Amino acid sequence: MKKVITYGTFDLLHWEHIQLLKKAKELGDHLTVAISTDEFNELKHKSSYHSYKNRKSVLEAIRYVDEVIPENCWEQKKEDILKNNIDVFVMGNSWKGEFDFLKEYCDVIYLNSTEEISTTMIKG
Ligand code: C2G
Image 1 (cartoon, rainbow, N blue to C red):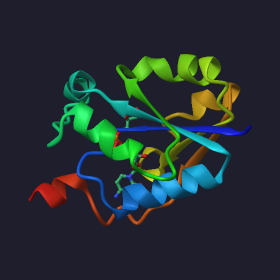
Image 2 (cartoon, protein in one colour):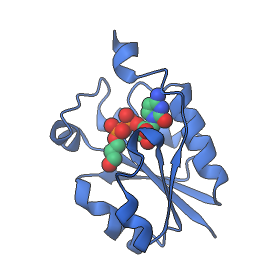
Image 3 (cartoon, helix red, strand yellow):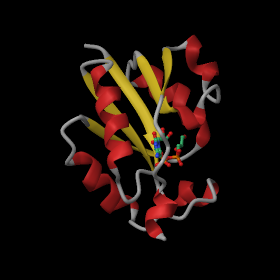
């Protein structure tokens, strides 16, 4: 079974998030999403409208998502990949190049998105 992982806050889910999750799932058979906890969001200087609990339940309702785990820190990716036997790490191209160090452990793919939408824009 080919396992894929991606990371993010996924607040106020919009169609570009869905596109990313759909394309990520198409790269394998199982998609794990590591969703930023409220505490980690503070570290990212990012406030989310919805709580971790609510953002997690929304993601779990999406057909492309097989498992949701917490993202507590920047440094957990290598351990997550090894512990969960991940084959492919995927992020939107807003992160292009940032996680190339993970190529030692799995494939690293940055997916194009028009980035037309941002949660901040939706919040208004
Ligand atoms: N994304 C996208 N298009 C958008 C907005 C976001 O493709 N219009 C992608 C981002 O590139 C990311 C994912 O959707 O891969 C989640 O985006 P956010 O929820 O904004 O998460 P982010 O703040 O990028 O946190 O350790 C990684 C971080 O947790 C990523």
